[in-house]
Image (cartoon, rainbow, N blue to C red):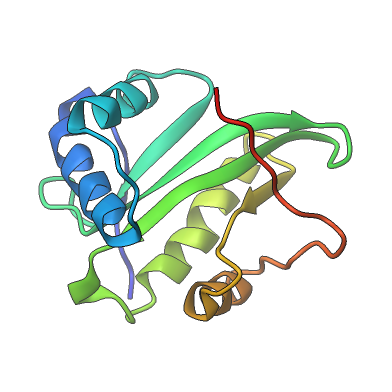
Length: 149
C-alpha cells in the first residue's frame, strides 16, 4: 500500500476534527469538538510545537498522524512524540499505519529529528505489533508518566 501524506493546513480542520472524533470515540477519550478544534488549529496554522498529516487523499482522508516536538539531552536534540495515529477501521490491515510510522518520522529526520516516541496501552498487543514492525521498542525500566493541569 502506498498512501499519500498531506501536511494538514487550516482548510483541513473540519475533516481532521471528524477523524479525531472517530478515534476518540473508538478509544473512549471524552472531548468536545470545540476542544478538538482548539487543540488542532495551532498545528494546522504552523505552530513550531507539532504537525498533523492527513493520510490518504486530502479531500477524503482515511486517517491522520499527529506529531509534537520537544528537546532531549539524552537523545541529542530534537525529539518528537506521536501523539495520535488513526486509520479508519474499513481500511486497516493494509499496511497504511506502518507506512505512516516509517515515512513521516524519516521525512522529519531531514529536519534534525533525533528520536521519536509513542505511548501504547500495555494490553493492546495489536498496536504493539504494529509499532514493533515500524522499529519502535519498549525502553526497559522506563514508564511514560503524565500530569494534567
